[in-house]
Length: 269
Image (cartoon, rainbow, N blue to C red; front, side, top):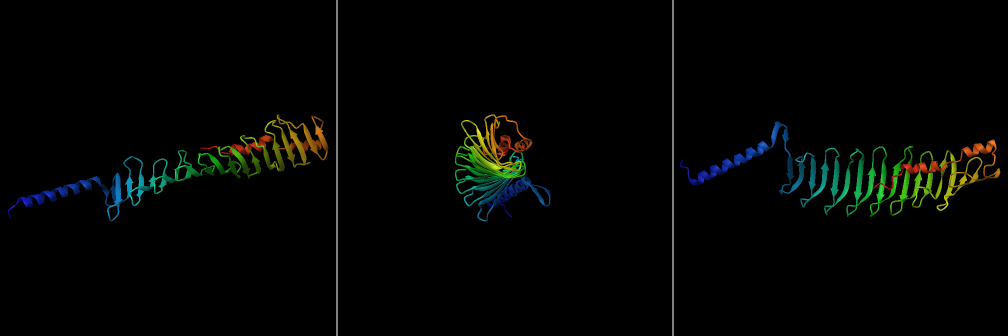
């Protein structure tokens, strides 16, 4: 058969096709009959539109899901700190689920401007944080070190204003730009109490529900110069009876009241 220029063009095209196919097969190195190795794989729909990208070329494996506009709307990231990111129609990240560097699980929900509004934290100290538009924590629910739970509310600057805790010493405290409560009610050492604190003089008035029930005036140094109970009014360092001394042993300390605040993380950014 006579080989014409048309046949030569056909054979040349066929040879190029086989060469390209061979290179493609070599790029997908087959180590076993059921295993294929590759750095990047793109899955497309029947109309040729990319729908999913599997990529390990950077050293960190990722899986990207694409929408109808071929924009990534969800991404799975592996590595040391695996995570899941979800985006809205305008390509702004709205949801983050992952592990922090200390392996603490975390869920972050954001608004349309990608500002975190709710944080859910796991680990040994699970908590829920709510943030305002200034990125300040204004509310939280958290687990306390004694196994109880607490709810904290803050002002717009993120400073604690109300704190309610359960556990062995339940209490409710109100604050104003200070870690010392101006007003508090709670149970400490199985004794109910109400505290009113003067922000200017730092003196305290305490209604103490122990045995006997008492009204205490506590000075700035933490001393009790005046105590009123069914036994009468006691002032200064007047000698006490054994019964009164036992009653005073039950009086809660301010440190007992402030201790719950050590668990508080309202100002976490």
